[in-house]
Amino acid sequence: MIRDIFVAILHDHSPTICVEIGRGNIPTVLQPSFYEMEEARQDLTAA
Image 1: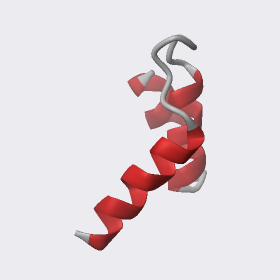
Image 2: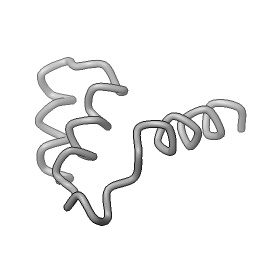
Image 3: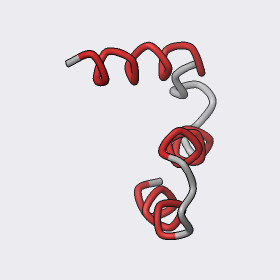
Image 4: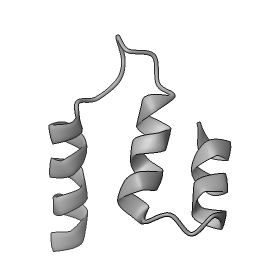
């Protein structure tokens, strides 16, 4: 997952797309929802 995120960064994808690529590699049972990821991203931006 981390490797795929780094490769996406190297290909100049936006950070949101890179996170989605990483999220897509997590098993479905453990995968956070898109909305959970968006909430976490907003919390980091606010900090």
